[in-house]
Length: 178
Image (cartoon, rainbow, N blue to C red; front, side, top):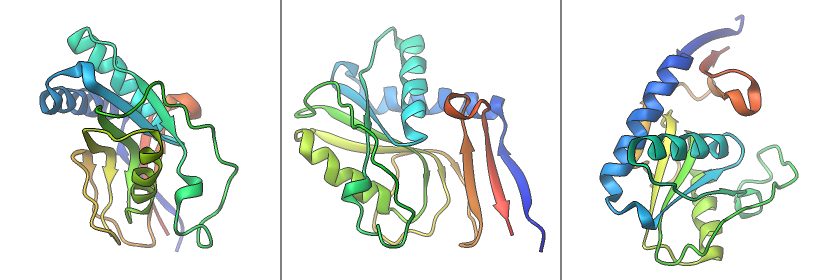
């Protein structure tokens, strides 16, 4: 069977989705002075920056953004392709903060489990919430995002690819079959 690529979110749909997600984060968190967005490498980092820009446009509040690499916290390194860990950059202590972890796609939940372990190295947040652009199901762990851009039921053999202007030069979400 030939590979089939289906566009799930266009650039305009991604923009609208990020606006909606930013509004939901604002509504759920109230006092934005305690909010910190933590993007999970790789695509979660630019998504976190875009969300912060959107929140600033809507509320005129600059939200700190950090980047977290979970490679060394994963429990499935033997099954996945390993890469050289990126530098975790967290702008302040997370103790007492309202942290929103940002990732592009949630699938089995293992990346988020690793991220939860990594976050504890940087303080004890008041609350940790999860925001994902695409939820494709198939959890292996009891992890559920608080904010979801698009729920996309997929088959296990399918892939969801998120492309963002930074670093990919284009904005789109694709479902790859076959």
